[in-house]
Each structure stands twice: as C-alpha cells, then as structure tokens.
Image: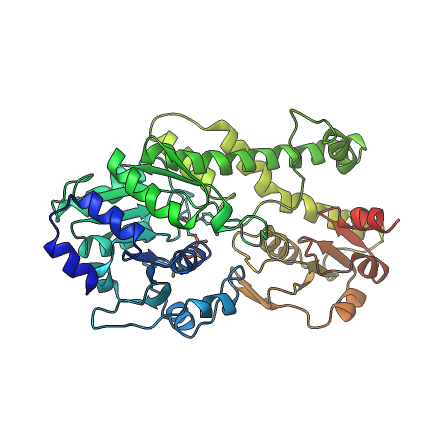
Length: 454
Ligand SMILES: NC(=O)c1ccc[n+]([C@@H]2O[C@H](COP(=O)([O-])OP(=O)(O)OC[C@H]3O[C@@H](n4cnc5c(N)ncnc54)[C@H](O)[C@@H]3O)[C@@H](O)[C@H]2O)c1
C-alpha cells in the first residue's frame, strides 16, 4: 500500500525516488525463482531490512518457506525462520526485514524491484533452453509499472537481457528504459556448500541497459553485498559469468586430460599436479575427477558457444573441454572393468558400489552429476550397481530409481568393487579402505587420507 501511495504522489524523477526507497528500506524487493540462487538472495535482502517477496511456480517451495522450512542446504531453517514474514495488509506486503513467498505474480504490482533467478538449462540438442526466462519475463511484464527495477540473474548468453527480456518489458508498457524503468543483468556466483564465500561477501558484477539502470541496480545490491563491481553493459556482465565458468570447464578438462596422459605414461597425475602447484606464480591448481556436474560448469559454456555459432564462430576450447569432461565417466568405468578383470571377475553380475552421487562434496545436488553417467554405464554393462550417499536418499534418472544403501559397512562388504565418485568429508576413508576388496578412486582420496594419517 505504501509503495503504491508514494508512487502516485511524488513528482521526483523516478530514479531518485527509487534510490531513496532503496536507501530508506521502504523498497519492496521481489525475487522470482527461489532455488539455490534465489532463496539465499531473498534472505540476504530481508536481513538487510527490505520488504521481500519470493515468487516461485513451485507451490511446495512456497509452502515450505511460509512454514519457515528451508530446502536449500546453505540456508538453515533457523535462519529462514528469522526473516519469516506475514502479509501485513490487503496489498500483501511483508513487514520490513521479513520475506513472504507466493506463487501469485500479481504481487509484482506492489514491488519496486524484481530479480529473476530461474533455471537456464540446455535443450536435448544442447542449445539454450530459455523457456523459464521467457515465462518469468512474461509474468514480470504483466505487472511492470513506472519506477521499477528488473534484474536478470540467470546465467545466459551475452545479449539475453537486451534482446529477449527488455522487449517484453517495454513492448506493452511503453515505459522509457533508464527514466521510467530500470533494467540490469547481474550474474549469480554462489558456490553451494562454500562456507567461506556466501552471497554477502562474494563480489557482485552488475551491468545496466543505461547508466541510470546500472546505478539503481548497483545501489540495491550494495545494500546487501559487500562489494559491487559495475561493468559497462548487460552484455559484458553476461559474458563475465560465462568467462568464469568456461575458465573452470577448460581447466578441469585440461587436468582431466593430463590424468589420462599420465596414466598412459605410467605416472601418478596427482603427484605431478601437486608438484606443479608449488610454483608460486603462473600456475593454478585444478584436480582431475569423474567429470563435471551441477547447474553451471557442464552447461554455461554452451550458452556462449551457441551464441558464437550464430555469429559463424566455432568456440573450439568449449567444444573440446565439453568432450573431455563428459567422457570422464567412461574412462573411470573402464578402470572398474580393468580392476575387476585383474581380480578375475567380469563386470557383468558384479556388485559395484558407487560412493557419493552428488556432483561435489558435502552437498545434495545431483544435477548433471557424473555419478549418474557412471551408474548408467555400469548398469548398461550388466553390473549390479548400488550407491551410498549421506546427502542423497534416492536417485531417479533416465528411467531407473535406486535408493542409497542404508548401511555403509554392509554395502562395502557386499561390493566386488567400490568406485569413489564424490569425496564427502563425512566419509572415513581409512575405515572404507579396510572394508573393501577393490577400489577405484576418481578423487584420489585414498592416497590423500593415507598422507594425512602418516
Ligand atoms: N546453483 C548454482 O550453483 C548456481 C550458481 C550461479 C548461477 N546459477 C544460475 O542461476 C539460475 C538459477 O539456478 P538455480 O540453481 O537457483 O536453479 P533452481 O532450479 O534451484 O531454482 C530455480 C527456481 O525457479 C523456479 N521457477 C522456474 N520457472 C519459474 C517461473 N517462471 N517463475 C518463477 N519461478 C520459476 C523453480 O521452481 C525453482 O524453484 C540459473 O541460470 C543458474 O545457471 C546457479
């Protein structure tokens, strides 16, 4: 109610009015998409005193937030409960410093800012699948109004904000961007499970459609995030995120290939990498493993290569890195076959226990996890595949469903071969080593844990 009233009576330029609403915390901030990215961001803004409304199409998530129950590991329920708000008036605004969740987009009519953090997956043909951004953009556009800031945070190809989102926002509204409407792009860099770097202390890159758009977006983020890094355009901000994740994908692929080359040369890749990492400059350590997973590294670089294809340019590093990383599960399954063969057993019919299925340690996310490919390849060759993961009770993928083994010791004793895919910190590697017949270790935890003990 307050928001609407102020908007109607003020004669201030819209940018100044929005800036003062941000500074005095009367601004209402909506976060559209309450997943790994959106929920921590919404909580951060609520904790800084804003009225926050989370919007998600998933009613289960909305209901969980309303009960104060978090489904995102990085946000404990106690923290969420600390900002849990109630609708305080007929306009459904939460009190300052609290957040509510809803699946009703009409609340956007009362919001000063809408930050969009919806998924950006790849289609079956590995092209950008923009359906979530399009749907969210359409919903925001329906309730766009003068003096509003809209920021896209979803990872995407350079040009998305201005070529895809902006036209939806101005087409029917006729609002003048930079004067009546402010549009920006700011990539999310959250690293789930990372205790040192969280939303608040990870620098935030921001690019605006106009300088005024950038100023408003930078000002909003600066209230909740320690360092904001302005860049010249939305395209530059979009490209920053793709550079970061392409850098990781390419370097992980390089070190995975180094592991394969060392194997052929009869060398220990980890020894080589550790020794190289003693160089105090000019080398950054990456470690080989079963492949890459999660919603970022396996997907984001392909947003960039897709865009470049439209400009008749073939992004060769991205292509090659994708091939090497996605082949790693096959490499490790071949190692399982070799290990069993050396023990006089065929893979077919052998019990293979996959340890850890999350895409990285100490989290529960299995999206794009290489463990899923390892399981599928082993199953296709007739192995009796089981898994154990303290964070993932069940895996359902490509038509099969497996439950995590309830008793690790029993599962280890039953296995003809154990494959370490995810190096969760809670595993006691010394005990695991003692309880198994054969082990294929994609993460080098066995050697590392031995080194720690000796
Ligand atoms: N997960 C990460 O570690 C991470 C890190 C940095 C950036 N990103 C990027 O952030 C974006 C979001 O990723 P995420 O991991 O939070 O995804 P997610 O799947 O965890 O969450 C997205 C949420 O958006 C909701 N949603 C889908 N369509 C919607 C719509 N039209 N309106 C409202 N809500 C809608 C979904 O129900 C879901 O709750 C992606 O572009 C991703 O690449 C993710």
